[in-house]
Length: 324
Image 1 (tube, rainbow, N blue to C red):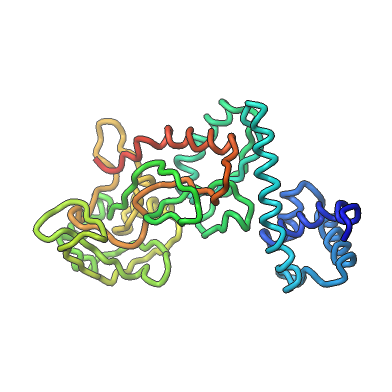
Image 2 (cartoon, rainbow, N blue to C red):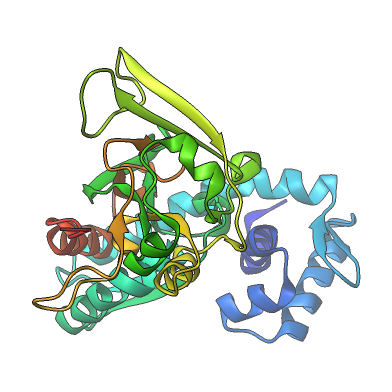
């Protein structure tokens, strides 16, 4: 197709790549600042011009046909390169500016990221942030995000990863619950306790503990000479959000596993509202040991993203207080 015929279609082709990421005309329209009716009409016109069906519409979902997916796969690298080139040219102006699409886990985002972002936007008024808090896995490149905050042990090799801080997970309960039900002395004792479970895959109802043989303290999964114990646990509540579990633990409903960033602070001069259980043991396979800022690899990082990462690294440098 001659370039003079292709040029009018570029915006609609970009709309198709956004629709492929969102699988929703409503979200696509919101992201691009157009009406839902306009977005749908432009896709229909694109299909008419191409002479092939690109989008499969149902009352419940939007998907791509084989032709539509192939077109998106071929175009995404080009649009990504255009975006990077435009950002690089804009960065030559000197002042960081532009939109950053950011995603983070719900609890971490609400408790610690939101205050950082407020301070950042006051410092950089020409930068705008669109923050999506979700605990689901997001493909950053496919869904158009510039940056993700995640706690993990193994960041993907296809991404640029900046360490923000160390983090750890602790088994905790309220003093009231332990006074009522007793303090577990070994992981096997948990089978007789009410355990509040974090929903994560098929192993949510089984906790695996590890500790160095003949020693106490933190144990890494790769350590040699470790003792491991698996125990089936159950309780009255399962949730995929650490804030929900924290509130239930504070209410004395049982024993649960929390990342340190979700632990409630102790009032000045008072004992912590949650205390650690089995401190010599570490539960394996749930939360990561570091908080990262992740970005799909690219030859150049926009200045606005660099500034945000630097701000987050400074803000998170001390980690989280956890339990005294």
